[in-house]
Amino acid sequence: MTYIRLPGKKRGFIRYWTLWLGTDHLLAVESSMGQERYKRFYFKDIQALIAARARHSKTRSIVSAALFILFALPLILRPLSFSTLAIVLSTLAAAIALIFFLIDLIKGLSCVCLIQTPVAVHALPSLNRMKYIEKVLPVVRSKVEAFQGTFSWEELKRLSAAAAAAAEERADRGDLFLKAGESLVPPFKKPLYGGGLHWALFSLLLLEAALTLIRYDYNNLALTILSMIVVFGIFFAGIAALIRQKGRNVPLLAKFLSWTALALVIADSLVAYFYSIFLIVLSRQQDKVDAQRAMISLLAKVRRSGDWFLGKADLFYACAILICGAAGLLAMNLRRRRNGRAAAAAPGSGAFRQEGER
Amino acid sequence: MTLPGGVPSPLSCPQCGASLPSADIRLSGTFSCPECSADVRLEIFPALVRGDGPVRAGDALEAENEASCYYHPEKRAAVVCEACGRFLCTLCAIELGGKTLCPTCVELGRSREQLSELVTYRTLYDGVALMLAVLPIFFFIATIFTAPMALYVSIRYWKSPSSLVPRTRLRFVLAILISILQIAGWMLLLGSYMFTPGRGVG
Image: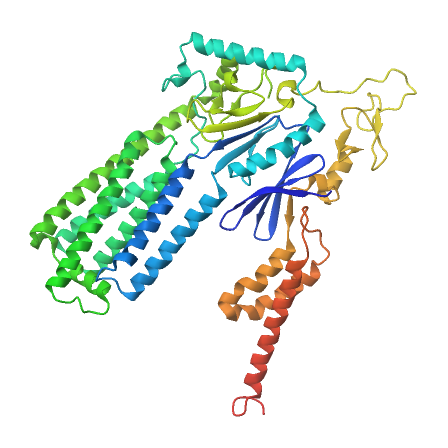
């Protein structure tokens, strides 16, 4: 059988997905290192194609643009502490952020596409942009019509009657679809986002709080570097969590704490940065070739409890991120328990749905 | 997945998984999901409303001289398997790729990969050979082992069934070229080491 490639391709780290048009079916191909897996969707069986615009697409573009500005600013401002290595790394990071932003801009809005058959609902990962959907739909529609025909007058009447009955029912019940927690639509069967990034973020916050408290009275190079690594981890986990949580069923408290934690970490990093510049200027080491290393060494030698400003700032910072981390973990734990209870209550939802739609 | 009376079965929002209300289901169009407010683009087809046809269980034999199904001797044969010629009732007949086959031929075709319509997985040896040739370049010493392996895989599986979708043999060709270059490089290296004056022979 000859296949024709349809527009759209999704690339993962080692896998990629494509969609092909056969004579009587669609072939979804998942390719990875040296192997391929196939799924066929026969045109006579396809019931519906459903695509939803991904909520995170705008957020992702904004974050890419923000990261580009963040890494490009130091190149423009050229503060005294920037060594050649830092400039190179900044340039690389800014370039990567710009590439991601441009790719997103050129490819257009991202989406999630499902294909429904009598047996199950499958995702079509290769149709991950709205412009691919718009190109593929007419082709699939014409093929499906060749096998299934078009809706008969009787079928259209039944569809309209069912839609009208459902609309009337919704109106009678006072538009419950729009009220949070009360809906004729069954609750989610399972959350699409497991919350892993938020768990990681809040755990790292607790670790950073512990490190800050240790460094309050005892500080050395190893602890300083470890703290910097943890802060980087918080930074990236925080950004990823902010992207993932948009439009998902993450507790409101966890969402708020993610923003707060990121703001706290950025503020603390800026304070540490400017304070270290102050220290370098004070110690007259601005002519040092590798000012980055000098900065870290100076920060590692400072005992927080002995410094009035840094001590108080660190105590406040440690308490704040401790509260954020603990509250965040509690919120995520409550969410997990709630989802577990909802899953346990799920067996009745299928029957409920049928009754609701009758 | 159709409900009694031909009422369309629930469709799910791809973003949040919530059921889309029937009131919003149209033949084709865009609307907002009531749960996550995502913009949903929907295209439905007649199969959603029509549902599955009645199950054809096969007709019983009415006269003794009627041909019976090979797998159900009490049922009347309706068709013949196009692969093995067995008589089949309507229950046993399987339509596949424009042919009518019996369950045994379908299973045989699936296990021997003779029926491309049933293939769900393929190992792509051209990709494997190319990976063996290219990836170890980063750990150059490993190429002394992987280059011959890549060459062997390329030659051994040259004629093996490849991907179901159109694919050239370019990867095999590249793998052969790269592995030959690597082998030649190693031979030169070892030869120069052995024949350098004061080190080895000569």
